[in-house]
Length: 462
Image 1: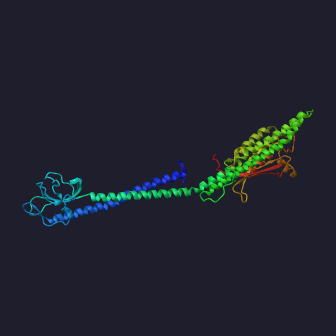
Image 2: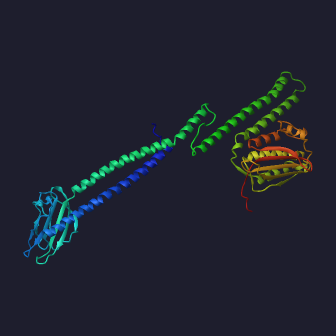
Image 3: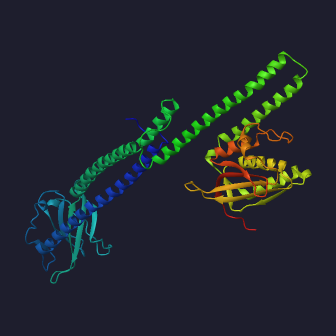
């Protein structure tokens, strides 16, 4: 099994899980150790307290200040030398040890003097043979016996410590095994969970190497949107490439005849050769301009990446065209909702509307009306805008309108231009899923309706 590389999603997920599991295991281990140690400590203390009570009951104090063991405490370890379990009785006022267990042999616990600070009821000291003793004591003053007496019981903590240490060691390796198992489970879960991404990677490799055109197969719900977007991008790329090949073929086909004419005229020049050269050069220029205009829009329009406020663009183009055609006295009337916007590139919008307004101004007698409105076509995926350009010119007969979208087709050769305006508008609008239609103005003239994807934006407050 291949280990995940650094800076990958798998490493981040496994690393985060490892930190969290380690933290929880440490906290859980400390809690379990405390819960195990605390009852043992309490039981040990209770055992010492019981033995101390028994010691007080088993030792008699007489009027001479002496102590005698009346009965044994019933703990065999008090009889074995340096067993770790000891008891002792002494007088506080004289500091003398009166009696002690056989297990102490030549060892005794130092008695506090009359002026010494009183030690706590339970404390720890070092015993014989390096033992760590837990001492519990009680001060007794008995009627008929002079002075005060100190009863104490001591026990070696080694058995208690060894038990706790053994539990902690078992707990440590148990939690270690549990942690390793959890990390293995997380590793397998992450690897299994990321398999769809590896399938997408393999599918993309098949696409890159030409074995497939799209991502194939079923993907989980969380990954399916990514696969759908990638398929959409692949479809868009394939469409762009197909259009690019078509443009190259169309351009080559369109230039074939002019180049043949130029070659023929160059080989057999006549008096008409200069005029023929100018005519064919202008034709080549129109073809090149047309395909360049289409190339600018082919790769971006279907993505609909921006929102361009419509009214400012309409007003700006109207002012520009009025200045260009100022000598003809053409006026442009603009009306549009200021909340309408075009979903696409501003350059493409200006290219389309600029061509339509320029054509309208060329043929209008006095007035061009430019207005925009919103529509919601049945079954459409969103808002659509319609930009309507009306002029009061002669118009175009209905049977000639389809020909006006042909490349280089011009109705009036006396007007300047290349005849590519409507063709360019149609091509760019088609890339955006829109359309352009020619019609009649009720009072006479030509109406051009441009349909494009739109959106609503917030109106600016003055």
